[in-house]
Each structure stands twice: as C-alpha cells, then as structure tokens.
Image (cartoon, rainbow, N blue to C red; front, side):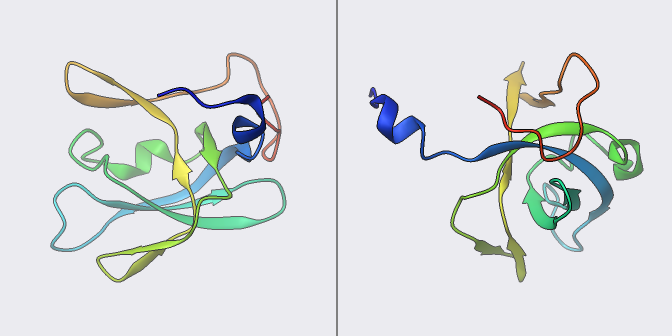
Amino acid sequence: MTINYEDFSKLDIRIGKIISAEKILDADKLLKLIIDIGGEERQVVAGIAEVFEDPEVLVGKKTPVLVNLEPRKLRGFESQGMILATSVDGRPVLLRPEEEVPPGSTVK
C-alpha cells in the first residue's frame, strides 16, 4: 500500500529521550517508558521487554517517537505514542540518531 505525501505529512515524529523504563508486571513483552519529547513527557508502552531484560539500559537513549498516534491502553497503562524500531532476526532494534540532537527535534 502506498500513501501520498499529504498523508505522510500528518505524522508527527520527534526524537525522544528515554527518562525511565520499567517492566510491566504480568506482561512478558511490555515495558513502560517515560520519554522526553522536548519539554513534554510522554508515557509509551512498548513491546520490547524480551530484548531489554534490564530496562535501565534504555535510560538516556534517544529514539524517534510517533507522537500524534491516538492513545491506547495496554495492560491498564495508556500509551501516548509509539517508538520506532526495526526487526533483526525477529528481535526489535531501536532506531537512533547518528549525531547528538535535542529531544523534540522533528524527524523530516
């Protein structure tokens, strides 16, 4: 499926800095992340717990976040965005900026 540029331009993707990360009890795959997206903090629930057994290693890392996705409840926690990752051999790998950029920087 293809989309036109107008549809693509509706996506608000910003660089977020992970401030905290913790496992969600009774959820093997879910982590609760608090992410700074440039002066605003968002809670994001991500299915990456199997790869990051120690979620603390994520604190301080920067990754693109889709911030205008409709909020959704997962295991009782509201997810206010989605981190962007790829999959290598079936495991998620976070995308990261190559250079230092401030939280909230827009991905274009």
